[in-house]
Length: 299
Image (cartoon, rainbow, N blue to C red; front, side, top):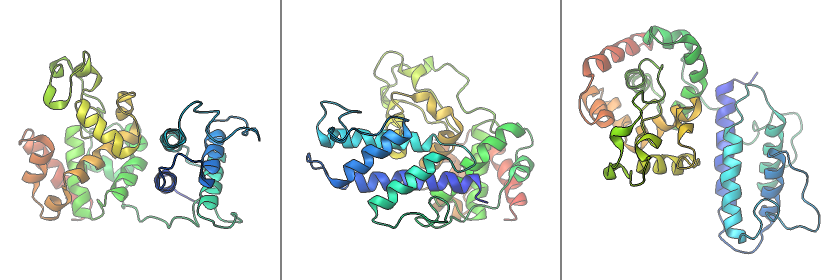
């Protein structure tokens, strides 16, 4: 039985590997891999097979240069793959596995589950809903249940992989999100209008790019950087950051980008807090949740 966190990790690893393979060439000439990419895009989009007289990408991105269509296909594939959130293997997983095997010149899948022969299983943090609720007793159990697989994926993805790192990470997230209850800033965001230091240069940017995610990403520039790292166009779809998967992954991205593991390894809660908050706002509560997390995770 494959757990949902492991399945989510495999899906993300697949999206990453597809991007790596397909963008390894910038040629404007069609490559053998382009046919596999086009086929997979059609399968995941529930479109009919490509007619034999039509070149790859012509149906999805007509009149685009091959190199541009290839990039757009990769971006669309990432979105489609990361949006598969079902806890069970889906037909899409079989299609993704088959495409990867073709691109990697691997034999067809026989008895293994999709992905299992391509990516090793990932060690996951020993954290469950009950343990999270011990640390954050004011959290909504349903919300924690929905967030947990994405939290486990995020901790595995960004090497938040020791109990001490996990304790610091969870403590900060619990404080920043009001015990996981708020994935989006309550304020409408008008106070962020014209904040050019955040890249808010267009009318409506304050509301459009207000704080979202478990470590609130704020401002057009930060949305753009985060989206580029995660392979999601957050400029076009900023509210995606308030959905469970990206709320967690964006927090991991911020944590990694600012190299916060080094402070967690030193058990330096002040530097962890300053890096996230820019100061020590709510420091007593951050320390309280850290102590609770250490106790539950046996640090």
